[in-house]
Image 1 (cartoon, rainbow, N blue to C red):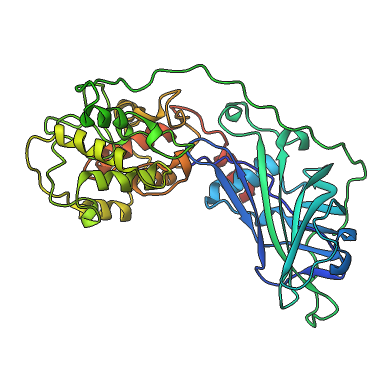
Image 2: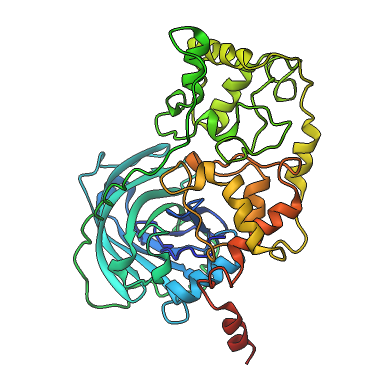
Length: 456
């Protein structure tokens, strides 16, 4: 999915140089994150090269350079990696990123002893995509007992400031800044006996002109509020069941940045006549109607619906657990809409879902897929709701299946899975086809042309 993604700058970063060189093997990593639809785009490389001139007794005088071959960066989706290299970073022309550190200002300590660390403000330049700019960021260094020097830090790379262009259709779908993180190990060349490998990147800047420090990115203007889930209240007053009904619709019972509610995942009506509720949507999880009298919850990890809600809050709503008052109120609400006993859920179906894949995931009916997406997906993915708006043409078919069928994600993008019981493969195939079919929305990148050129 999101094949796109971004190019991100994957970058190089590490820090100081000279009598130290990057340790051989996968010691440390360079990672980046870019905000994207459905999930943030995350990439990583462990192919860092570089050296530091640094004396631990006066580490603020250290300086050096670190380089990264950009074709070694991976995001987890091969097609997206190819897009990133060819469409954004243009690695055939600009094959590496290079970070130089000239000095450390305002160090927290003059010296770094073994087993200790320090931090300061690194001042230098960053070269990417044929552009070299001044950079300034907080860097941290620590010296292990075995003499390994670890350097870490974080800085932002605005795409526009490095002349990285994005297709217009992606403009509002992706963040315009890559947050780069690095944590890299260096060994002392005076004690290391292994010979240094031939570097794959030049360990000195190749661009003469140094542009000024990029200004902080401007925050996006607030979006106009859009329709939220329609709420109906059966209970009023200060009774626990009325408070629980309020919690059912409220994201406030989750963590400080949570946007999900119980209503996004669970209906409150009887689903025996069909999964689609009065508001026109089907939920990914089973309804709360008649759920309170099940013998067990969460496959036995919870003994009542209130404790089951506590598990949901921790997994999906970024919380640390419900308060006793919240748990009791939600239990009272669920009991109030559960007049009859009901059997324990068969979790084997959910476990089977996690393992499932779909044959020919983009071989369905895109017209029917649009109708199904409106029913299954819009409690979260309608504009202004908790999830991002769908962007047909932007995704990888296999990635969509994986996101719908498996528990994975982060933050408010921790999408609850639709089991094969509630969303059969046939229906999911049609939805995936709608999101990826070229007649619905032409792909962002013409990969067929790319393959043809590569075969010549």
